[in-house]
Image 1 (tube, rainbow, N blue to C red):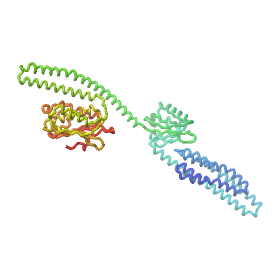
Image 2 (image 1 turned 120 degrees about the vertical axis):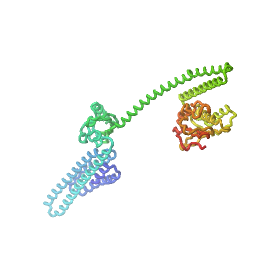
Image 3 (image 1 turned 30 degrees about the vertical axis):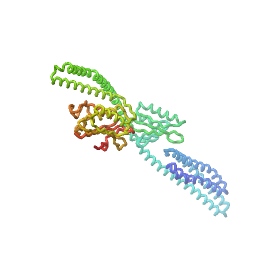
Image 4 (image 1 turned 45 degrees about the vertical axis):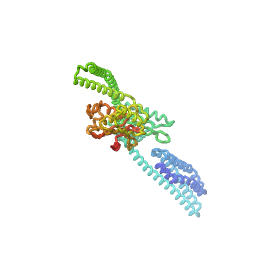
Length: 538
């Protein structure tokens, strides 16, 4: 019986399967031992009757130990369920000890009577009396030692449980069906300022401001009303009240404690001040983003109004100036000297250049407002088409085109055509002074599996000290008299590449050419970044 109780309590406390084999072995051996004792006492009806009467108590004690093993299989906080079973086991052990003590007294009395009647058999009777006393003493001593060991192990388990609860980051409260606090851990004292002794027997409403107490009472009442069914884990956000009167936001999660009567729950309370501050910052950022979106929408509307103004209000006067300048040349050329005719020609050229700038600005505006139409297409074929268009404009030029084949991409074909038209157009323009020029278009792999595309020429090049101005609207690195242009082309190219979540950069050397590199969104959806190893060799 000692081994049964020791193994049962060890398993209930630790949950280790290694304690089950000794338990079941010892429990199985108890009934045969009782039968053997009955056989030994068959000649003593009184002792046999006492043993028969105590046998159900022994059976009940075995059942209690089995219940303790069953509790060990399903209890997360064994200290509370174990206390009841331990008390019941102790009471049963006291009954067993009392019965054995009575058996001993009866045996002594019977021996005294037999001593008077059967003096000749004194030694034999004394031997039987001594054996009975020794057996009773051994049983009582064994039960006492088992009880002491169980109490010691229980104390160790309680200490381990206290350490476990103390290490939890949340305040933990064990609450009964009346909403009263049964126990709490050390973190609860840190959160609210009350010790476990101060909280025991107090209502959970003590831990929230007055305005939330009715809500909390209803919360626990509703929770315990589900006892007949499955009690779920619930979470509630409230405001906590510290002992010093300070309020702070809390989150309370409640779930049942696995006891037979289901009358106790655990409530874990966490201080969510930090989380609320983050949520407040996120809310503020969202409002700022909404405001920014409104500002952007307003800016787009203003841009549309500007585009309309440029398209109609500015273009019309320029067309008038150009038209009247042409009339001067055609109808009044004989009245103008050579300087006058030159001035008029310059005036017309300026008007035409201004119209080109207006067209470029309108194209940039429309491109920024148009929605991307992403599809897979052959970029090499598009490059060959743009190159062919340039050849048609000036078929007499000697230019070696080197265009890589098989470059397929996913992007907006119309916008990427604008990119190639501008980059190829610049290469065509800045190699105009070469007797035989070379323009190359290709791609190099990056370490992330994407590609870096490049357009390279052997033309005028540029000073790298001024490279930061390349993609700024109206910032030109060459004089208008040397190479005509609007100053918008590369800015347009950069906008298109950015809309494709890519990057563009350039390297050049004066009189030795330039290389423009750009990336597009890769297949995985991540934008390609500049790779120092991705610039093609010259």
